[in-house]
Picture 1 (cartoon, rainbow over the protein chains, first blue to last red):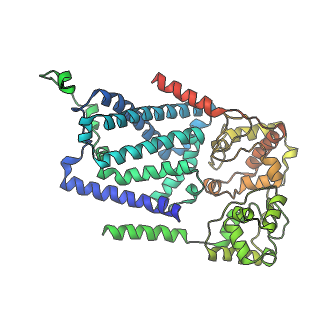
Picture 2 (cartoon, helix red, strand yellow):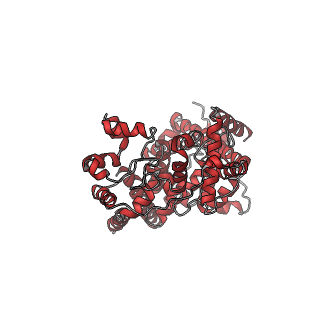
Picture 3 (cartoon, each protein chain N blue to C red):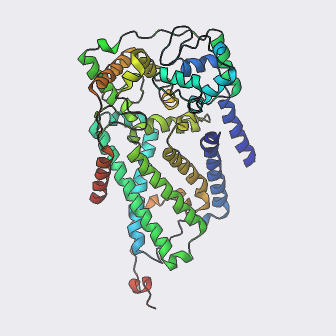
Length: 230
Length: 242
């Protein structure tokens, strides 16, 4: 019954929250669709945390998406053992990159008093959920190899069953706890997304890729502003 | 309105969960290990089981055989030992669904085909190689099923070993024996595997090839190699390179 609630009911609750709250926010508080940048308050550690985190998570998200959309092609790619190994090691590398970035971001948020001032409880929730997600993801990759193969064999049919409104929980029931946590973590991210700074997913600055360069000129000593002398 | 949507979604998925047909369930979940009147297989012949055991006992055993075994039940332990400690997968069924299956068994079960009668002991080296190719995914299964290596290991085969989501199959042939292993591959009763190969059943030739490969692996014995450390090392190298 608990599996049914977590993996057959919760996904729909999460998606309903995602769409309804996001639309409500879009129509009534659209100018708060933001990642609430704290770059002005601290930028050095942000760089070393944010860059690896975002490169890592974007590649991993893309990998999960490709597996979902083209499962047969992933199996075909993995049919040559060396290619599967390359895919797995690449995924593990980006997973580790995510972990490094996330740990630095957590450290930054917890140790800088200026950042703490602008930190909400939902920020803590977001970081905790993401940390669980990354730890269980890396753990699954290492201890339940080869994830790229069984993801398309087990998880993709489960995810597709959700889209068909006929969830096949049997795919999940006998999965190890770590895998279940990773799946439920993903579901909960969709659910909490519109209540947090993660809402910036929905307004990615894609146009930055092709817009013209912008020249930014600072008329003051940035370093002095960043690290005020007491 | 939002509550109505959520409620209708829950009712929709619940309705799916309760669409139960005993013959189809028996064929998919019970028939790969049991017969009704055709002798013992991976598990015991179920003919007359509703007379031999009480309904209460059968309900408990079907829902969680390991719980009954661990409770010290002498009959359950005797059966467990007799069938080489093979664990029967738990069946997540409601009381009335189990009753429907027991009624079906009482009335003679369903007609089951005998399946491919070739034994892996008669396999050629080509059959074994072909089985290895199927196992590792070098050759795709005709109906699109995932290669075994995704979840299983056999000895030292595969890049840094096979998958570990499912059990190591090096000694699967000894455990399930020829006929039982063939059935387990053809119509797997294990919950996840059953779903994975639903509609993607292996052909008789594919089953025979994989069975032949497992027979050979069983004869050669197992090797324990620590693959996790190598994999973590490669991931660490990747991070440094990045």
